[in-house]
Length: 473
Image (cartoon, rainbow, N blue to C red; front, side):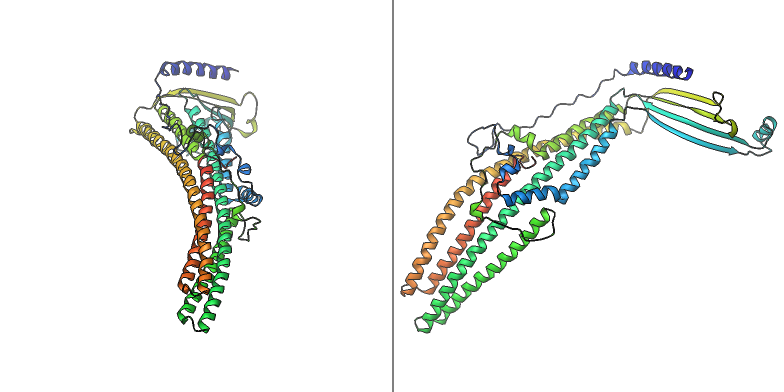
């Protein structure tokens, strides 16, 4: 009880001294507010609602695509690694909650020392103990505690919290990327399917043209050059079919890897023309987008972490109040080691330590922490600017691709009519084979281009959904 009383007296006395120096000012850090436009560029109205508020199951209504995304969220290795990082940070956060408590340890030691018989210690031991060696047995608890006068421990806890939240936001950011990548890969696969269908249809037209040209050549009304050109057109289409089949298999492999599976065939039950995504949607307000974007939120947490690190660097320059104590049983004979209360001992120490000269290390650490915060402010503002830019790019791409799709569809209709006219005129001998081949080639390229534009428009909608912060819900 006397030891406990003395410890209390030490704590009170050192706390009084600490209070005398605790009036030192702390750094005042300005709150960082990003510069945001009131509305996104290329938006007609400032609607507070946003398509990004939709969960990915509501945004993507294709059951096959939903199944692929669900597999990706469950099995994608990048996501799994990110989740492990979250779990690791969560453990550090749990540990940080105990920083304010004392450290307590327990140790047991046994020591035998035999000094020289000709030494003062050796002769003293023989005189008082009647033997040439001395024993020492100790079992004690050790306690160490630092008072959080300057908020250093609190800031350390804040750092752990910010780091945990960063890993959580990083996981959400990876999920948005995985969801968008799976959707775009799936739509690319549907585009390749459509282009393969177009190429096969045009192959039949090329075969028919070749048959007609051969018959005309056999009748003597055409040269062998026409046959060669028609055959080359057919061979070009056959080559295109082979390339498209290759690209389809590669895209299936890429999608399989994205969802965490070995390369396999991806089943499709619909065509690209049957896909549907929200067409009339609102981008919402830039301020709301910032709170939804995981990558921007992560950068903001990095900034908050740097604020806490400045607090730690500043606190390290101020006096620290530490209290240490230990107590247990001690004896120079093993047979009476645990005799109570004779073997009991205890000690307590409390003191304030003020760094005086540390080779400018502490001031350097503080200045570096300030500079790092300035860098993080710039990085945060840059992330906000990039996010606004990505949304604006997706908006303008979507609007432009709407017009391109309409024009491309009109071009396909016109060129298909041209094929029919050219074939009729060719059979009648009013045009040569080159005009028929040209009409077929132009129609093929126009149809392939239309399929590509449709896929680009679907991708632009997915890009907008991701850029606005959608996909992690």
